[in-house]
Length: 440
Image 1 (cartoon, one colour):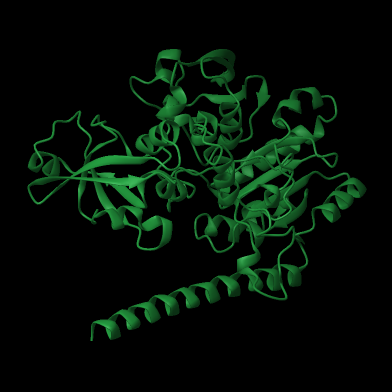
Image 2 (spheres, rainbow, N blue to C red):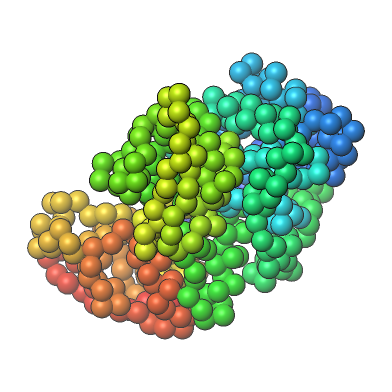
């Protein structure tokens, strides 16, 4: 009976995975059929889009979309189907839709690879006017993006296009330094597993590189070399919320709120401020703000040009030591691979006040509840060690200071090496239990 139940469980899991894969396969194939059939968007063919932009003199709009991911699906649908709010604006661009990271030019398309939808506004010579698309939650997107905000960014891009090439020197910093690998499939962890094209004749979904795999590959370059993962790689494209600036998703780059007691408040930013430039770069959206922050120094100041009422004035944004670490990375898709590396496949949430009291833990103590334990392969290391869902992690590697899951992930990624065994203590049913898991 036990063997029969085990077999039925395996069959059920396999069947569910097969159905899921088929659903993803259908989504990707249907997208191509419908979008190509409609004939408005240039589909998965950037060279064709560039040629058309040069011929017409229009700027390029290039969207990069991970089709199976549900996050930003509504925005993507409204854009690709040309909602009336953006239809006239779209007609002023040459519109290109990219649905794969395979073959993506990483010298040009540098963005937060935890996105499932992003947009680039480009001159035909591939000067970048700006980016659109941000994310700060695993599933919800209404606080980050909107069709209204996208329309505002498009208008800003058209203004920059009208001023081109006189403004070209100001736009130079919107393209980053040359990456170590020219395309995702060249990264060591992806090389040999993927090609530069999707396999529409075979296993389409399995042939696709997802954007988050690029972020994972960047971390693995350091991890497999036994080196600490740098802050810029662990905390990419910091959300300005980390500094106290909450931007309005329906506007171009406008401050909706300044958090009380934050660095932004101390620096003099106010709700309603329109951020025109940051570090001299024109801003079309919060994604442009994040681009500047991504390349900002570990400490220093960034000068913003701000429109406040009828005035335009400079306001300096202070970057204090450790500012980047205030951002939360726990929501990121790439954090699942970090959990495999350093948590043995555990997914951790903040313990409730009642759970803290039950474990006799103070407010400054580590108390992260195990919300999920990986069941298979490398993700099952914590399960194999004896950790269970519902346990409360109260110490790891001798550290019992209060941390968010993202803080713990980053600390371990920078202080451990593959092959180490790290001790941990959990609280379960009134008892403290000690285990150890391998770093991967």
